Length: 216
Image (cartoon, rainbow, N blue to C red):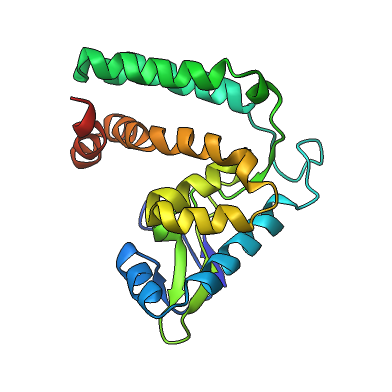
């Protein structure tokens, strides 16, 4: 609706967007929705959105979005970051488990040529807007992490935010969902470590501690 980029400084450069009525679809709102027996309808809304997003006819060569690295390369680089920055804070057994987990993914022949689609990239509770009075999803925000990637990554956000039961309901509605489920679990297993890395890079002690806690 408006923007100001004359002075590119924090607090002076800004943009304004039309407000989407509602609030983030936190786990508490999900529990309330489940008690109202609206779970199937909400799952259908979210999966319909993801299916349409992942099916958009945009390719890395179209020039609309800058091509990114392939999934294998991104996961290799993530593992190297974890090993160099986080391993000094992790117990030896956790280091071995993380390395084995990544190696299983990286050396799986099926993962060597994954189809890249347009994805949201941060499809978690904080970016899903919930309209409590209408008992429906009002919108999706924060496309700053969107680009080309593995569609399974978006479902990892659902699994992380709302748990196994709702994830099973959603993945069952997605075309070919069962084929991508194993990758969903892998991506979900990296989230805490990514939070810890974010904490180190941005000097956010709380994020670092939250992410590294189970690996100490």
